[in-house]
Length: 325
Image 1: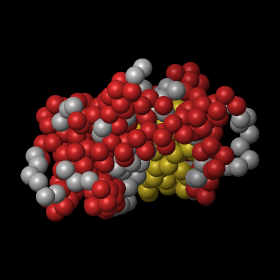
Image 2: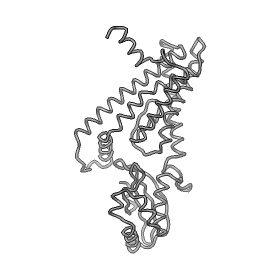
Image 3: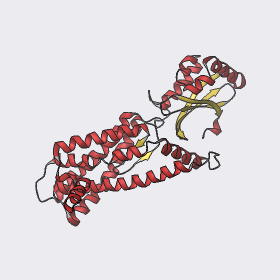
Image 4: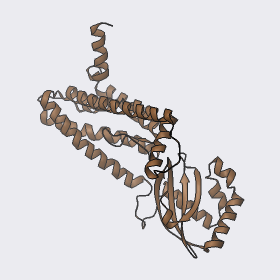
């Protein structure tokens, strides 16, 4: 490979905006952003900030897609303003929007890195041991190696994305040198704050477990599903509950058995009186809804465990003080 070929490859990787911009860059960039969100939804990977990546909370597909769009728009909008202030030449807004969208294309690799089962298993292992240090699950060395290698790769890819964002800004707005670096760094800071606020606002409006008790859980949320499970049992509609079971729960707790367990519970603590409150947490890769119930002689928490497919993987009644898993 000669010097010109190496230079061309380096330009394609770190400054492709010499070759593509405008509407074409916008179309390619938006496709990459949405595809990264789609793949990320399979592993609960969130791009919840300009250069942030976190794996954890279950969320609907539209939420994952929205995060990438919010990140792109926040930075592009602020860089448009920065370009107007610092650039001495005219530039097109479509070039800023398009190149900033295309700059996020390496997030595709990040979403793929978090997808393997070994990465997810070790993440759950870490969560379990942080929550309960004496957890007895053994360490899987292969999973640990995959997780730490993936984490290093994610850091490097994030640096690559930031480099591409700066290159996109300097090319589209014709702002370079110390002035360009300073303007970009300031825009990056404000865009990070703005994206965090916007995504958190979206989370408050849509995610389970964040509404006030008086407002009640939203329909279709995990918290709402957990509440509905309790209310179905209280009404004697056990078929509606078992319809949400995963295969293991369906086998070990069929409808007739669930009805019997519910009756035995009321024999011990008195009849069901009311639902008091509910909340959502995460434990070992599962989303857990706690619904506090008032029975005749005690208050108990219904602990409803949901898997990644929103099927019920566990259903327990525990003392209120033992709600934290």
